[in-house]
Length: 484
Ligand code: FES
Image 1 (cartoon, rainbow, N blue to C red):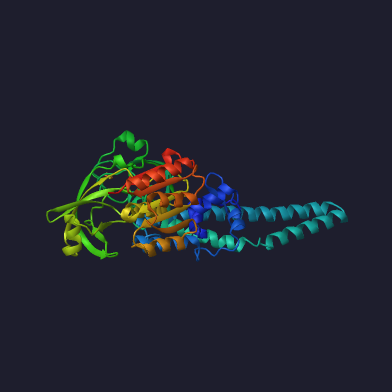
Image 2: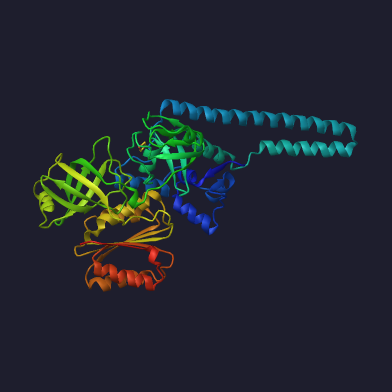
């Protein structure tokens, strides 16, 4: 069989995360050429898999849904015209396969007749040889390979996937995601946590321009921005106005922290949730047509009713209009407002984002996240973003705090339960910054191939960084954010 599947589709079909598959390819337990896996190889490596049943992928999706309260892998149908185009493409493939099969059947019948001619012109020995050969050929045709049934299920499942979703590969970054339902390419990328460059998100600015390298797209929203004729001829299109009809490859730039323009957004309080006696989670919702553009790990300025404060965003950029922030109970006016009298539907203005404590999107190295007390907010956003991108080989989370259990201890434990490449260790500050840093580093003797993201007081970060560099961490692998 020569049918091949992309690693992203294999992840969905067999219920294993993409990072786990990449690890298998690296270790040589799964053969893949240019990110494609042959069907025979898939059936060989996953002989017992029940498609989409109880695998790691399903568990990951479940935990993402719970953690992010967002729609993932929802079987929403695409726009009718897109659906018709996809069905037409699939029917064309089916017709081509059927015609080829008919041709092979004719060829087989013709071969049997030719063999009869040979038998007639030869002696008894030839007759016997031809008869045995024909018997063997018929036996081979009837004895379908034992994987054939499983292969058919696999192909059928993949066909359904291709009708409800299309895969997008982004060059040069190599990110992959699926466009589902009525999403545009830009919406699907943002849901997947991939910060492609964009501006207005409604066809006015041209910032989301990308180039189609292969595949078919369809305009699903009108746009006022006019692409030059030379751009159109070169394959440029607007990601906020188009969806993918088939699997596509595009050239598009991924935004860094300095590419995102400051925004001012009038939000409403969705809830103030007391996480423990000291920390409240402030949940905000942006207007229906607006989402805050930010990268995991960044902070914003919040203001309401004449008071303001700077806080780190604790939610993932992959969430639609929901923004979560952790507010410590202290004497700052904004904190007092949150704990004393901020109510559902109250207005809160967000200005930002700010900060460069963000994920290195290029790296696939194992990641160590370290949060000191309410330094957990940016770390939580980074962890969720890294989970959404399935980018790291493995993730380790250390959360150091005065009060145990930590205020979102259950959430961290659920991540560790759901993902086999994720560990979580809660730690107490007892012993001080140096002891805690040494305790963490004692678990990781060789850090030459690792990234560390740590948020906490300057003294702790100083000990952790020095110790990590002594264990081989590259200065480029260190990402520290001082929390005051
Ligand atoms: S984001 Fe402005 S045109 Fe697409």
